[in-house]
Image (tube, rainbow, N blue to C red):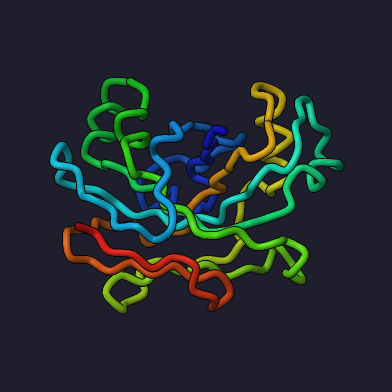
Length: 203
């Protein structure tokens, strides 16, 4: 399986980091060793002083496809969940200044906590879903999928023009505004429509 992530897919998040709002999806990837499951603790790496949380809705691909037409793209995912795209912002900033790739800032071990997945059929409207991240009981991020710049179907169609999607692949669809640093001792809780799906500690 592979982890494909979309950057800057909420306009306000792009603006808070002083990034331009994209006109096509911004794509990066994480290795499978980034996955952190079952609400296991996240161990803050010693190579960064500025690890940021980014709560995201995650799609689970349910069948193989390439060159997928956008009008059929909804058939290629059947479950959704929550994930956190942990980002070493200090490393990312240094790399961006030099025009270098982001992998070291995005793909380190444990940088992709994920929740259990829920059939998308359980949700009445996939484009009116609230996602929220609380840190130590205080809400840090609070967004809604109605504000996505690129729809789930647009993302799947776009990615599949370049990369074949396979069953079990995960797509992180972007984070709303409110990203900030975590530190050891923090308690993170992620909610989708007020259902708590993530609940883990930073160590």
